[in-house]
Structure formats: structure tokens, C-alpha cells
Length: 280
Image (cartoon, rainbow, N blue to C red; front, top):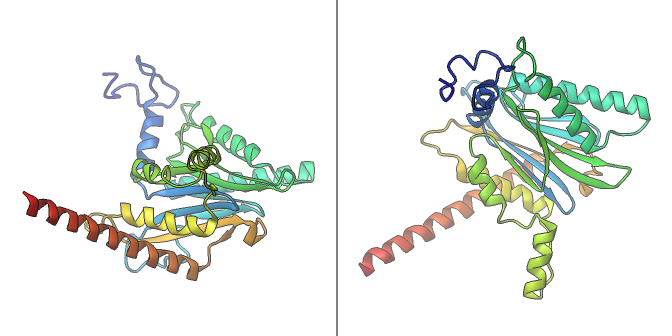
């Protein structure tokens, strides 16, 4: 009974005999069935990207079901999962940012914003009259006081972590594998540079836009998945550390580059398969 959730999944305040909260696990499942959301912390800022499925051809995609939102001048979020749940988290993030500014006269630090949002999300896992949020939230923010930028993710369970690269949604695991190949971790980049004797450089926001577009288009299966719109935003030196949407022409160029890279990679794989067949 415990393994199937029968009898123990009626309330988020009930533990199963093996220590699981099935309502929270179901919320995670809702996120896993949604579009992929990615975030990269770069040398000069943070980039967010979300795959927004287009449920019908008649949809006005520019104004409907947005996944990327600005919550303060130096902070923005990307959501995936239930969009309606995500809107509540976005509104809460805006309230927290505004209240912090009114109380302390300064912008809310990224870690404080992430911790307050995670506490809010966690509250909905503690009471039987409530249900967990079926949404994961990526937070990109800049702290003018410390001159540092960071990337955080809040999960449906209410836990939050700081990342160099974060992924949520349907393509989470393969996306993480691809992001681990990028130069986003300063320690790993420095170690690689020391061993090779070269100069290690972290990825820039301009390059990250291309790489995130490539990852999302690589994971998208046109035969099975619905058409989608790629939403992207960044906060970086070029934007004055303000959270803004990536210009449409930049996204278009990144998508064109990504598709070309994917086609070339598929062409090389087919050539290798043909060579193996000839050898056999």
C-alpha cells in the first residue's frame, strides 16, 4: 500500500510508512511533464530559457502563458509546471522584493529572495487543507551591494539550491548532462586550465544563449512533442544588470545556429554509422 501511495496520498501532511510524502512527489511529477526550463550562471550574468508549448495554432503566443517574468529591477524568474501555480509564486516574489525595498531601502539579495520563496512554497506542504505547488522556479538575480549575480532554483518540496547551471521540466536530466560539458564552474575551469597550461574562461551570456537554445532544440522531439516558443531572458553587464528579455533577433540567431549545429552533428553520426556498416 505504501509503495503505491494508496491511503497515504490524500494529504500533503501525511507520511507513508517508508517516509514519503506522495503529494509532494506528485507535484514533482507535474513539473517533469512540463516544458524544459534552463538557467546558466555565466561570467558576465545569468541567462534563463524556457520551452513554452503552444497548445493550439490559434494561440496568441506573445501574450499568453508566459514562463519568464521580471519580479524586480535586478531579479527575474522562469517557471515550469502548472502555469497558474507559477503565477502565484511570481506574485509572491514581487511582494517579497517590494517589501524588502520598503523596509530596508535596498534591493533584496538573491539568496534572501530564494529563501523566502522556498519558505512560502514549503508552507503549502505542511497543511492538509493545502496542496503543494506543481511548479519549479528558477531565480536569476543580482545584488548591487555585493556586485554578485547568482542562479537559484526552488522545487515543489520547498527546497532551494544555488547553481551554476540548473534544469527543470521534461528534459531535466539530459539537459543537466549537456550543461555539465560547458565552462560554468570556476573551480573546474581553473583546474582544467592549470592542467593544460592554458587560460580557462567561463562561458559568457552571449554564448550561453546559443548553448541553451541548442540544448532545448536537441531535446525537442517534433514527432511526439507539441510546437513550442523559446522564451529567454538575461541580466548581465550589457543590460546594466537589469532583468530583461533577450532581444528577438538574438534569439533568432541563436536558434538558427542551434539548428545548424544539430544538423551537422546528426550528419556526422550518420556518416560514422555508414562507415561501420561498410567495415562489417
